[in-house]
Amino acid sequence: MAVNSFRVALTVADFDRAVAFYRDGLGLEPGELWTDNGRGQMFGAEQASLEIFDPDYAAGVDQIEVGERVSGQIRFAFEVADVRATMARALQYGATLVHEPVLTPWGDLNVRLRSPEGLQITLFQTSNEVKNGEPEEGNE
Image (cartoon, rainbow, N blue to C red; front, side):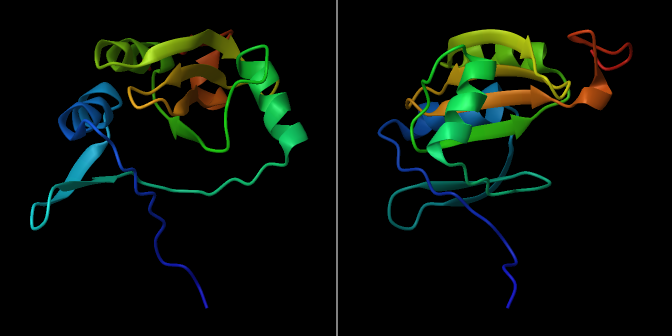
C-alpha cells in the first residue's frame, strides 16, 4: 500500500495575506481554488517529503541554521534556486527574518524565516548550486 500524494493543510486567519505570501513571496505554484464553503487554495511543488526528527536532531538543525533552539513541532523547508532572492521576496510579503543565510556543514545555503502566520520556514539552496556561500554563476 503506497501513499500517492502528500498534503499539508494550514488554517489561517488572514487567507489573502497567506495566499500572497506562499504564491508571491515564496513562489509556490497556485492550483485549484475552492470557494464552495469559505475559501481554500491548493499550491503545488515538484516534490514533497515528510521529515521526522527527534528533539535532539531538531535542536541540532536549529543550532546550525539559527544558533539556538527556536522552531516548534512543525517547520517547513523549501528548496529554492536562489536563497537570497527568495528570502528578499518573502520578506516583502510578510515573513520575518529569524537568521541570516548560513552555509551548512553539508554545503547547502540555508536561511530561517517566520511566515506571516508564525510558522518556522527554512529556505535552502542545494550544494550543487552553492559555491562558497554564494549562488554559482548563472544561478543568480
